[in-house]
Length: 136
Image 1 (cartoon, rainbow, N blue to C red):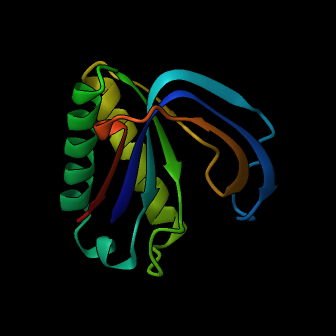
Image 2 (cartoon, rainbow, N blue to C red):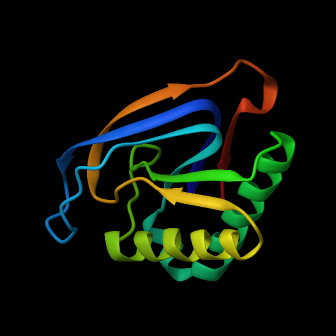
Image 3 (tube, rainbow, N blue to C red):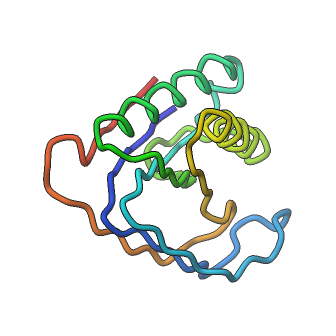
């Protein structure tokens, strides 16, 4: 798994085109302020270690949220961090699992529309822990 964690003063998206036929139509835009975003690439090899990668993703998100003083999180599927890609159904299951676990401990969590290309607005400040990359 690869994850690029970007703290944003503003993060917004608008769906532009559907990339997976199996997902529902979604044309709703959203905008968030003072939010921790997680640009996540679930890799093929992660399918054999689901609980381990989900636990590490959860730990890293909670850690960086603590450092950036926020409990707001946006999970974004970003299949551009690695050439290895997990099955979409598996990736979505990881996202849903992490969302549920974060919400259970008091985080406000959203996901960008899965299976879509999006127009993104990213306003990220320039301090040390505003951008963190992890590979596990």
